[in-house]
Image (cartoon, rainbow, N blue to C red; front, side):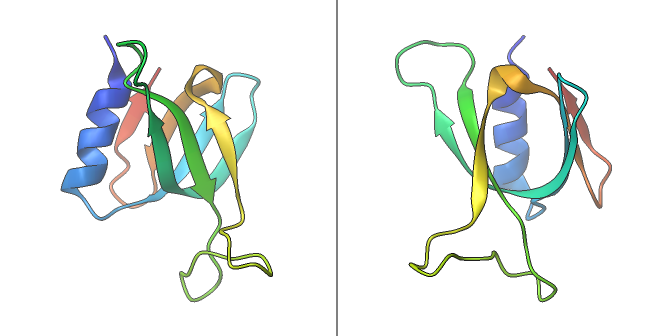
Length: 93
């Protein structure tokens, strides 16, 4: 079952983006979902890469000197679980 499609739908239905990402290597990353890359070539996973960004104290995404959002791209295959900060909704992969 491809849980990335359910996570994608949850993002569209809710305004919540702040998450705790658990990677398969044991690392935990508190961050915000900023974007994603749909898998156009293959059917699974629906989302193959996520764009995560940190927010400043005002809740705004931090940008570099060129105005690009500071963040990281993480392949879906590296993610074990994503938990939403406020709703505690969890997606395991």
